Length: 188
Image (cartoon, helix red, strand yellow):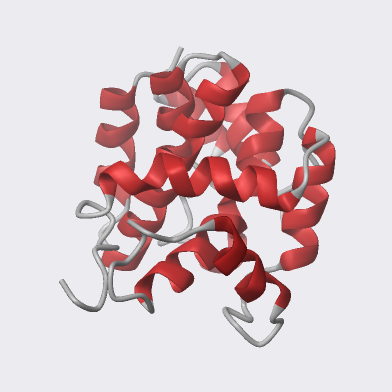
């Protein structure tokens, strides 16, 4: 099973762009919260979340085409590699998310982008971001327009949950790490 320490070793050897590191951390903390929601191993889910965009910086136009073989060669468990591959389902991967881990990663990858955009606009950042404010921004298609809302909705539907429920879990899971993910707010 992938450990957080190993995920960080692997990802940090590949990913150097600041915004991609912040994204990895956002997904990592959101996945930790999703693990707790489902009663699963928090550190393990965080590790998978941190490593999910392993090949993106080097191969943005071939995302996930340089992940499976490479991670297996690094000794990453087949189930963890499959989970990572599933976050690109229907976009750049044919691996359908079937476990709660896979479905969560599929849903929160894009979702954390909107959470981050919301929090960055607020004087207190993510610390006082409430679901009502988030959902207002989520419904505004012009806000964080590059984040694929249909994909987020599809991921939440796979989990049998509303977007607001998944977003609330992720927001609460990210709040304690506001400094690390640079979401302390415009007043910080």
